[in-house]
Amino acid sequence: MERVLALVLLGPFVFFTTVTSQEDNVCFRPVLTANIETDGLQRFFNPGAELILSCKQGYTPVFGPRKIVCAASGEWTKTKLMCKPKRCPYPEPLSNGETYYEEIVFQSVINHTCDEGYIMTGSSTAVCLANGTWSSPEPECKPVSCGLAPIPQFGMIIYDKRIRGNATDYGLRVTYKCLPPHVIIGNARAMCTLNGSWTKTPECRVVTCPAPENIDRGYMSSNEQRDYDYQETVKYGCDGDYVLEGSLQIVCQQNGNWSEKPSCKAPCRVGIQRGRILYKGKQIWIEDLQPDRVLHKDIVSVYCMEKAKECGYAVPTQCMDGELKIPECFEQPSNYVYTFNSSSLPSEIAHC
Ligand SMILES: *[C@@H]1O[C@H](CO)[C@@H](O)[C@H](O)[C@H]1NC(C)=O
Ligand SMILES: *[C@@H]1O[C@H](CO)[C@@H](O)[C@H](O)[C@H]1NC(C)=O
Ligand SMILES: *[C@@H]1O[C@H](CO)[C@@H](O)[C@H](O)[C@H]1NC(C)=O
Ligand SMILES: *[C@@H]1O[C@H](CO)[C@@H](O)[C@H](O)[C@H]1NC(C)=O
Ligand SMILES: *[C@@H]1O[C@H](CO)[C@@H](O)[C@H](O)[C@H]1NC(C)=O
Ligand SMILES: *[C@@H]1O[C@H](CO)[C@@H](O)[C@H](O)[C@H]1NC(C)=O
Image (cartoon, rainbow, N blue to C red):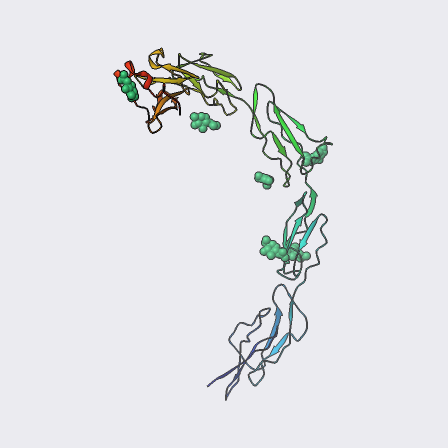
């Protein structure tokens, strides 16, 4: 029955719908482009009906009639009404900063940034509103100033540069010191940063370490059961033939822990019954080593036989915390050979 003709016009014009019917023509509700609106709500309009078009919020009419009429043919009269987005004023150039934008019309966004060393007061971004004003006023870029640096309790501060009043520019550095016996915890240097705040202020604290513990087979220079101050030291020694490995003394550190303790390392027995060894540059028959004991890290050589060439050679081995490995090439002579033919031992014959 009904033939619907939808004519689509390009650009911001009105789409309109035509209804043709044999007997009585009515107009359908017009289809409008995005930026145009009307207050007529019904679906059909009788010929002669008028509609007032208007621009949506944020848009301004530019030209063309704002009224359309439903003609007897069932068509709306044509309109060339055009609605353009509202413009916001051009942003003023920002001193010590930059403003970025592509357009300055309704819903456009502008961004502001400050140059390095300047801090923004105000909003960094603004939107062009429906009434043609920016959503926030332009910000200001002010030179970064951190104010005076905070001073920790029991601490003092030294500025790298002389300051006037409370003007502390971006990049200014300070050094912190603590009044003894307080110790600085954290970074002794601080800086006025880009965002106008100082980097972390250190703390001044009294640091103590708990009474140190003794080491096995050793003794300490102090047995006092008390807290020890920062940088206090305690010395260690080892009993008898035990040898101290590590640092002779420990120190109470900033973190309240002692530095690493040394340890006492055991001496070794040279585990051969018969033979001659080379120890501290001297050849010694094993029974003459009294007592049979070499110290941790000492080097002892035993003699092995080069069978093909019938010569002897010394092979070194080291005492490691009570353990001295005898080289595999060492052959312990029989009691007989050792007693009656010792001149045939590898330590006594020609050396290779
Ligand atoms: C403004 O900043 C926003 C968010 O960072 C970004 O999406 C937009 O592209 C920027 N606009 C301009 C014109 O730089
Ligand atoms: C524009 O609109 C905004 C938000 O709706 C309002 O705060 C502002 O006062 C208006 N400005 C003018 C000049 O009407
Ligand atoms: C510096 O001092 C002035 C006046 O003595 C004061 O108004 C200002 O807020 C201070 N600025 C800072 C960053 O502390
Ligand atoms: C300032 O910047 C530093 C790092 O540069 C950051 O750790 C700190 O949280 C910032 N402070 C503020 C108030 O933004
Ligand atoms: C101090 O020593 C304890 C035990 O060795 C360890 O758990 C702790 O992490 C140390 N503290 C610091 C700050 O290094
Ligand atoms: C001593 O040993 C050498 C070599 O093994 C051998 O030639 C010699 O006969 C031995 N002498 C005695 C008295 O056993």
